[in-house]
Length: 74
Image (cartoon, one colour):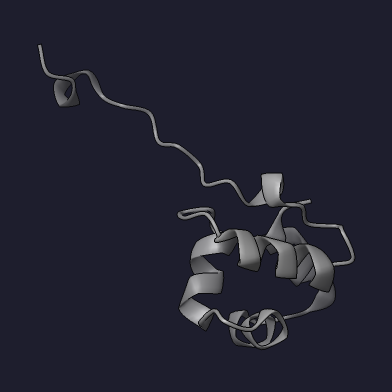
């Protein structure tokens, strides 16, 4: 399950989730929720514990944006 889906189901804000996880800011939770960055191993383990295993480390992997042709050097 993705973090944003779990947080929506539980009715938690980024700040509330950050408080439950510890060692992360609300902004850090927002980045994890929208999958723009991945967590540290410690934070991933805390999220898995806080969500009782509903959100796993693999669910927190950031989304990789596609590379455009003009970004690739010839």
